[in-house]
Picture: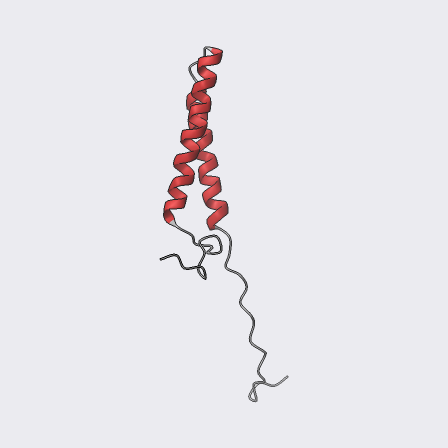
Length: 86
């Protein structure tokens, strides 16, 4: 069931649910912080700021996670081409 040779930590493409979780978690956490600050300060706009900031952070985390390139592949030794003049 759990394949130790294939870890999602090492896979640059990862799991699409992780991208969804980053965005939803960011919106939820920063939205909650904004709501709490609104209640504490008596304002009504920080929840919207928190939601937008959380969405931006979630999108950034998704981009940072999935934009990593695959590990470099070992290069094949250069083979001599008898038809190529140097």
